[in-house]
Image (tube, rainbow, N blue to C red):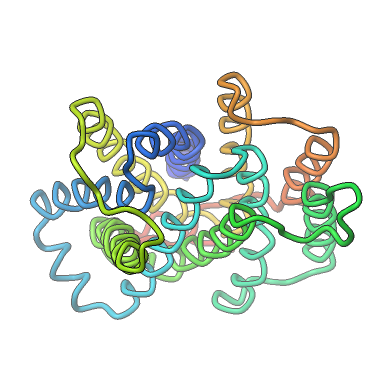
Length: 302
């Protein structure tokens, strides 16, 4: 049991680290004229093709399992929204707002997984929302509400990510490769459809010639995101949704540290206090984590 638990935690930490650094390639590719939506679709297309070639049975399972289509939708929305947000907004602010995700995870887990919703959960939600109000507050701007496109994209991306993690728990009995391929497929189709619609309307540019450095970046991050998705589907399928949300908060530390060192983020005192509250909220009253039932039958949630 302990080995399963530690492997699940390690998978989630790998995912969080890769996502915490993902702002770098998307900003670099955007600077070379490749919009984050195009970049997201290309990166995940390479990863999905590699997995489908290695596990062709997973593709057949994806097409025959309606629930996996919902997972694809959640994963596609998560990537399209988050990757666009970190490419255009302040990285720390975007990641903090994205990580209101534990609040949405609590609500969705109650609705879809029948996980208990207690007074402790209510305290977490209140503290998390208080932190968000501090991050969103701008002096002289009235109510602390999202005011930029990056803010809205970050919050919506966190909602989609919460749905993604809850869906992974709900679909734990399906094959691991099928779950991963479903997530990768969603991260290909939705961003490319959105990019095509926006480019047709003149809102963003069409992808042009890509330099050699950009090709290398796309190839490297295709493999890293494949690894990240494997880690996420393994961990989230074996741990309670609220515990997954807590562990994934390590992305905040990776993103904040790397972006601050690179000069891609500006830290205000309200951001630090609000961010601390957002990070603190899921840690309060965390129940002891135990592996839950998985496709391999390695444990069951009590």
